[in-house]
Length: 140
Ligand code: HEC
Image (cartoon, rainbow, N blue to C red; front, side, top):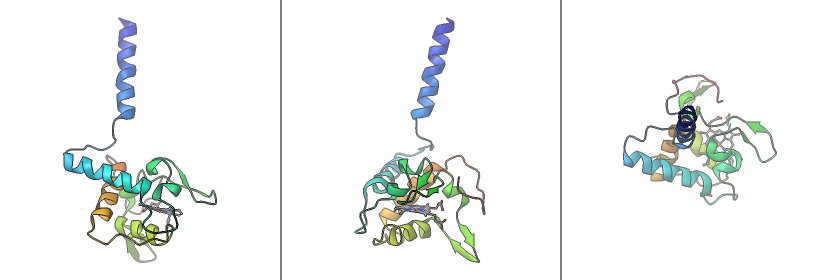
């Protein structure tokens, strides 16, 4: 009985660990999260060959690093700390994604309102599901 209980507990924990971190309340959202993840891990935007995941390791879920090895935070709370305000300048999550494509990837940033930018935005926001909004906070 005790053993059964612990096995059940283990199975439940394993399920939690492998289930997605967002509510996925609609199939439409789920599809966009998947598409955003696909772009995040494979899309080169006609740039220097890098993809988002080159620096934002493991889909942005763990600490990342620059090509020179310099560490940087994960994207797990990125959506909760954006829009970002620095020196009087407001940067939205989508602005930041376009900056990374234009700068880090030296590619063509997806247009505002495009499916690509929307999907990336939905994917990154899914990582922050359940996190409290923390305007002015630091990425973790
Ligand atoms: C060459 C490395 C590199 C690549 C490739 C890259 N980024 Fe970034 N990204 C950075 C750096 C460095 C920062 C921190 C910028 C800052 O603090 O101003 C950052 C910041 C971010 C942030 C805000 C969170 C934070 O820690 O400041 C998001 C969101 C983000 N990147 C998304 C993307 C997406 C989406 C892609 C792919 C389209 C991408 N990045 C590709 C290096 C990269």
